[in-house]
Image 1 (tube, helix red, strand yellow):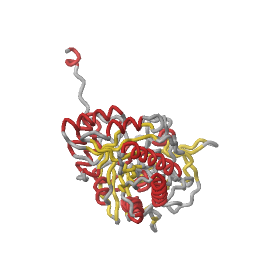
Image 2 (cartoon, helix red, strand yellow):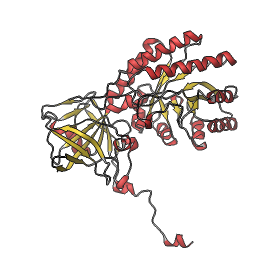
Image 3 (spheres, one colour):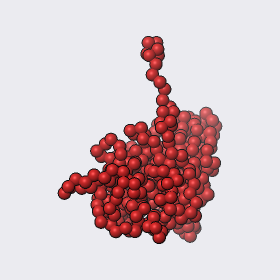
Length: 440
């Protein structure tokens, strides 16, 4: 049995998260329920930061908030002196509402609208990560109209394929993101921006994928980007001060996953940058990274109530829960795997194997295949681990299922940070049909 962060099991055989009894949490807040171990989030943030500080390297650690975006988590991120990566007007608005320091916000995205970019200028964010030539023209236009400076990073694709799922690999040449290094797009983007009166090209950005378990791809990316920046310095005398190597650091979903500690990723990045800059005679830039899943992923646990149980003789056993692909689309979307535990029988012997099925009207709504558990019955509480990233943030109202509540737990104290949706919430934006409108 593998437990995460502050998780323990008490004398009653109940799973404890952040000092709180999961059974009591389910009784109080209902299920499905996202439970976040905030101490673990804080510890991960410090682990990334301390490695940079010990090396005396300029840095920013930006929480890649697409993993989980709410007012409350932005406030905790601010307490931990993190920067913030946002990818939409909605995430930016949430950050502003949370009181997050706008100068530490970086705006990503491959198709930012003019309205989103205008919002970025209006609130005064710290940096726009420019993704394509269309965006260069939009950012130039706004900066000139507003007569307002803006820091930018140029996102590039370094031609490196991380060993991960195709849908979450983003650094190879064939990608919807960024300027390609190999075909000259990155050089053209630099030429179009570095002499602009209002734009400051701080440096280069790349993101090579997600759920990465080794440092080799990050090292190759760092070498390529340093070489490119050194080339620009030699050609035109321009020095970029920031190298952003993105995120994608893996976590342990199942026993097959072997992630590295945060310090290992950072140490290897720093060493590679030092060596590459020494060879090229380039000043060491600030190193920025963007962990999302590796900060919040295994801090989150989803609690479900088990309902129907179906056994197909000589085939398999199904145990259905009161959630599913409406609160966790990842298994159906790209075959993500999870581990689980019967939270109210956490000490019981593992004797059975189940397929954990969701309640959505889809044959593919299966959260876990081959879940090894104690024998379950209706009413048991199932905990699914490592759902903190891309669970709630990708949740939907498919089948008109209301999205779950979210609670933070720290030092034994639970706090509701996202209310459970109600049936009334589901129709709040609906408008009635009118035959008169059709006739008009």
